[in-house]
Length: 241
Image (tube, rainbow, N blue to C red; front, side, top):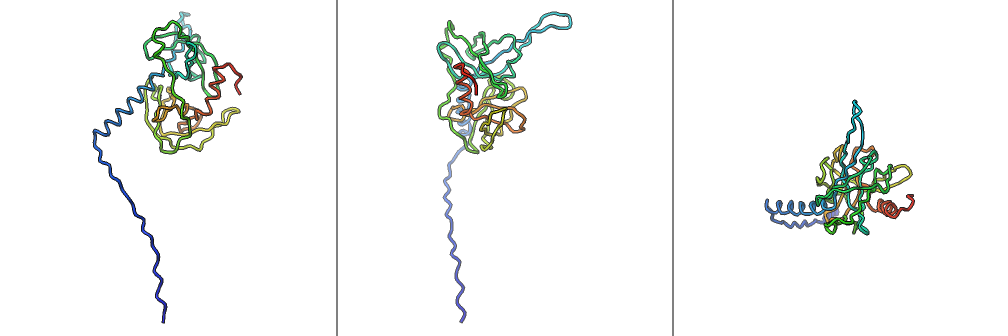
């Protein structure tokens, strides 16, 4: 007699779904929270005005002003240290910095790294009455992000100072080679305008990286953990590696 065919041992996977009711008011509340976080980050953004002196065809002098976003990364002994784009200040004859609190003051280039497209501008806050309202960005909780995590670009990502764009991390295993530097980077679906630049923060309010234009079509974020070493040396007048 033929032996009965063995039954296949099929294990069923039980899927547990937890439905959460939501409506447009919940979506609106999420957007409000996003706006509050964006506004808080923008309090540490400034407008860096690079003034270039020139002459027209009739030898009449004129001033051309280039405007870029700057990011307050530290305040020490009445001095604010501001990270900005090197391309925005490299041809400047003098620099002005306009704070979100409304006042305009002189700035001085302290250091820069052309390869990384970064420059450090310092501003003396002595004698400014509302200097206590000036606070740097938060760098706590620096870590590597996972694909799909939400982030926002602050500064002037769409070419307008104090603009903010939302997005997600789309890649994490990237390596950028700039001159002699080998840097970890991430990519995002946020598109930065040709005339814009940006700093990236997570939804906990921590800076995660700096926009790097380079030659890639994708928006590249240099991990802030790598950049911090450069920034500390720039502030402390130490030789750059």
